[in-house]
Image (cartoon, rainbow, N blue to C red):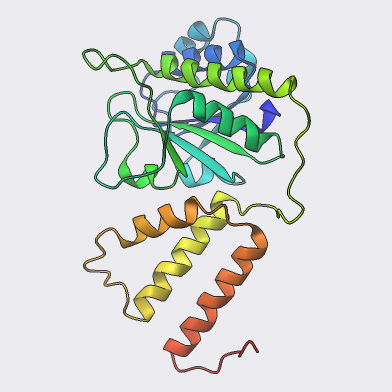
Length: 251
């Protein structure tokens, strides 16, 4: 189950923090580390701070974008240290651990996403996550070291996993389908945005927060692959109508 949970670090500037995060992960039984454009990796400082978690570092996947890091995931939870202009579904660390384990237990791929040491995740990056998690640290000294933040969430994941191990097996819903992955959702959002422009519902010069709000809407809906096929079909036929092309009628 825990192998279905990946830790994603975005644009980490100090290799020691990567090593510290790897150590925190191994302490709690997590092993999958994904690094998005790290400034310096591999590096001796990372190995030194890992303190025996070299297997996590050796298995780390280095990618060029957050989109690539989330390929195959059906749930992404992004860490956020401050309020954002657009409200988003929020979790505390305990809720984050419980939700990650609950979904991982069904075989889904889960990502816990951490941002840059000094700036965190951008709004665009956070909008690629289904939920945001905020660690309620002391407001007079709220800045957490990256590895410490990873440790907090990894601990909550482990506690939820230990609880899950002692719980009776859950009965899955008979009609539950395989959820669309984040990369499939990204292709849907791109298709949706182009369609909204085609029908003049979205002005690309003045988009405001429309796509962000639609991401939030669909992100909390747990769209499965069958539903995604229907949605993409609707968009395709809508574009044909907008262009005056022949289209299928669903009777």
